[in-house]
Image (cartoon, rainbow over all chains, first blue to last red):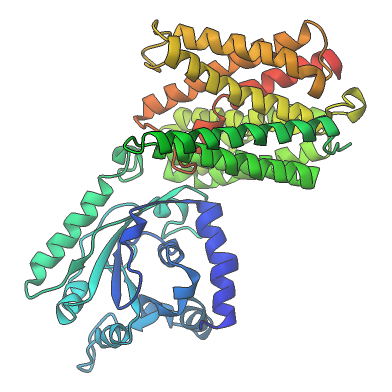
Length: 218
Length: 312
């Protein structure tokens, strides 16, 4: 059971923001994993991304959902750390390997517990609404747990609603397109290329990509 | 100031639900008769009508304030859909935020019955204020397009639609039989009915295209048949729900029929310009919210001012 504060946050704040203030156009919802272990890999443009991805799942699955986030950013002070760990429920990982510690170890442990990891293979939030290159962490993790499905989710519009450099939330309808699950394997480069390909295919489902901010129309 | 649901308005609402029940029954029979054909879209459409009518009726029945909040939410969804559809400049995020703030204010003027402010707030004050905010930001590339398209959308989705809300706060004494809710039901029902009838007449008799470059499926037969049916129905319903008498009732129907068509093709032209089929995906079987309220954006202000000039 998720703690009452966590539950209240997701029910009373996060979901109303995701579903009413923004409003989501979800496609292929049936492709989302029904249970862990699983990895949900999405593109990253905004702090709202995590909020939207978690809101795609039923509330009952909240304790299983673990957004993977950079420890150096989210644990930098105790207030943010408390919020990130106990309300958002992040799984903090180190961005750099130091002292020989394996940064993906906590992810593997969470998957072995049956959690659903939410991660952003681009690393940090990139240029708003521009699909960046994927880092290889997700491929390494998927190769180590080849039985775990990796579900790509393409998010669009959130970088318009709450971009990296501006704390003001402006409402826009946003898209969340779920792709078909993949499985990791020996050939990590092929896996990454496949994942990026699926992401681009999902982006192509947008009714009008050139007008939807993929290209800034200024 | 506020009017609650009168007996006539309540009876009319019950009639709408009887109509929906019939529609659901028809879909059920169609499915039973020819299970090989796909009625998913039609079924989704009828189900969405149930939800829309249900939420609307619940708001109207529970409290007038709730009705205003409901209509404000419709404006919010419509403006959000519009702004999500059109190209906007990153530089204008703050301007767009102000545009959203106009919605609670506009509906506040309605709630307090401040007619003067209601009628000039968006056409005058926001028309002057939003470009000012843009100028302060200082981005001049695309300025005219940004200022023009933002105000066009605000007029359509907030100013025009809020006329529907103002019907609720018109003095009850002028329309004791129908009340404010009766006026809204009259406008809303006839507008949606006109949409459906234009479609039905077009499907059965339609041969001559009326405006092929904007909306290739629309025909003269559908247009004229719809306007005629709506005019007759307006003449029948007006005594039940409105203070309109004699010639006024069919003319109100004529206005709703004509304006409904223009409002519809207006949004069609917008979508064609942007290259999208539906304005969104909020309402299963219908598309987006703009697809549903397109006709209302034109019928609401025209019906309101026709009525207001004659009776208030």
